[in-house]
Length: 287
Image 1: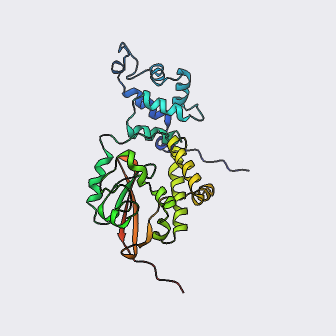
Image 2: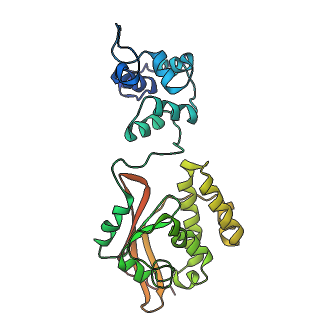
């Protein structure tokens, strides 16, 4: 006889995240009068399902099915409409897309935070540090970074500033453009071929949550047309997380130098990455 599978406990059901439970709780917390609906006499606090559906711009039947767990899959468009209609906060929107098992195509930016303020943060770091945006444009860096990456962030690049860059000049500070389109990069980055391929794999992983971003698509198309090395690496479909480790360079003035790289995410701006390079030691040469 085949053994029966054990029944799931009620406690396990309670801790399992539910999209429907989350939407019901959020609907109950909204005040009808704040959203243009008459208060009147209601059997339950908050909005009715029909009112929530109206705010989200979807049919009451479909909204009800989602709350009741009868929808097998909810589209990105529907989740975006729900996030907007129910006035979800940044954290609530992120949680909604997680429960819906979808990648948010337009994650909201941090609340009450200006990324230009990160220039002060990187200036406070004594070792080379820089911040990349979602397209890997450098938007902030410190003097040690400019002195290390002379041709990318320093006096060898154009223009040269130590602080955060305005958006219209950021393309000149793009990391991938520098690595693949600046003929000085292969001589500066030790083991350039392997490092360049890894960068493309890391960028592909970054692109996964915004596959429909037109700017990102145009950027990839531009680099594929301009660099056969980038095109080959992109078509390989390799995906890697942005990991740390030893990074070695052949500096035009300092000669050989090595750093341990660390990449941090900015909580208020999840699409930004802060990279720090702490002085390290190059691995001994092999026989």
